[in-house]
Length: 118
Image 1 (tube, rainbow, N blue to C red):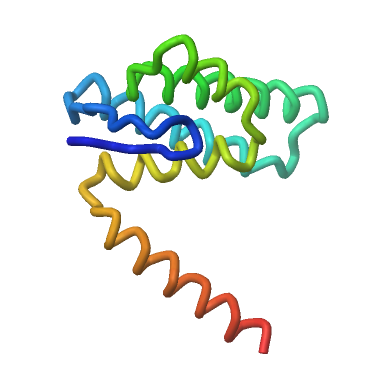
Image 2 (image 1 turned 135 degrees about the vertical axis):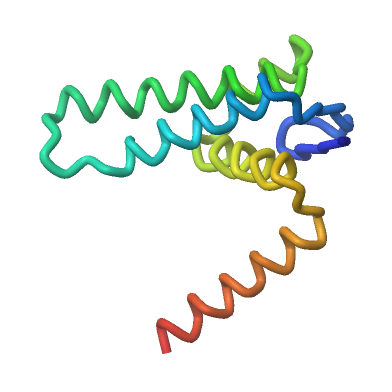
């Protein structure tokens, strides 16, 4: 499938949903979930988990998207929030969602967030 992460480049990346790539995706999702569960963790352990999550996110995007040196440099300079958004977008595309599906899901989430605040 073709995935274009505009925060990194305008190039479409050919991503295969091989077992190896899907395993990398699930490994990172698991690490991200564990990093969210910081209750009863020591500060040093939390920092290590967050550092590992950042490192693995950069490695995931570099490997899965096949980033060239220029794209890797751009990724290294991106804001962390943008990096997480790029990872989540790549996850969604790898799980079979189209750009239209993702846009619709985001709009529904924003509408639900707005109604929760009202």
